[in-house]
Image (cartoon, rainbow, N blue to C red; front, side, top):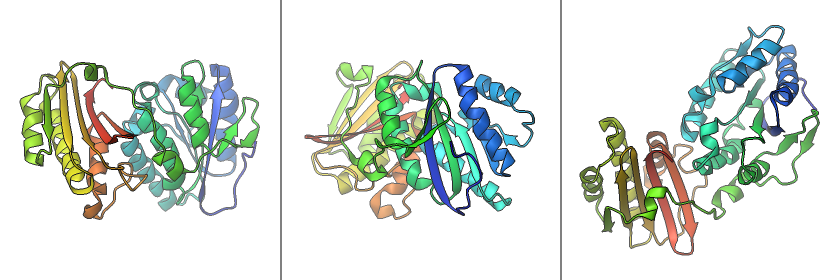
Length: 316
């Protein structure tokens, strides 16, 4: 396992490791973190609180390690990218020549909402490459489904075995190919019922009114207004860049809100859309980036019928 200092001034080294117990987690995490400290690297551990405490207790001196909670950094994929980029920029500005991170996607991301975390794991290979970064992403095989482990294999250029060997991952897929490949989308349970509202080629204003008029959620007004803004942006993008007809569907129930926007086009040209801001407003990239920060879950679906964006508040 190559754990020592790296002479490269830049570039992202992104590895995944599977573990089956807390002992196995510590067996890979602690040497990785200690090697970073010994090399004088800025070192971060971003895990659930109880796992972070296990790592902290196993280190002779953890005072030089940054221990944000995973909830702080992993609220949503676009938020995680923004937060990590800010953290790493601060570390570099403070004099760090190399950065080392051991982290993992929180348990809430390993269920129905995994699809956008899979996009995250693929995208960061490009997004973080401007930083002198080495990271190791842990996945507990006791709680991580096989379909997710398959995505993990496709999104990490390196893998680390339980005994510490670091290997080139032959199953790795470059980010643009992974992000543009068709992916099955699992329906939200509300989608198994008839929608409360269906509009064809609605204006953004009509879409906003339709969402507000069919709010049955009881969710905080601010969250619903975030969804309304997001729907308006997605509808405007579909009308501008998609292929008609543009179809809006709305489902709402206590604590749950689901909206889909479908058009018959091929979908987004930018594989990183939503995860990074595109400051050219003509591409819609800035709006989709905001949508990814405002909604509880955003799903892209491509099939022979066209392209669908699903926006969710409440349970994924």
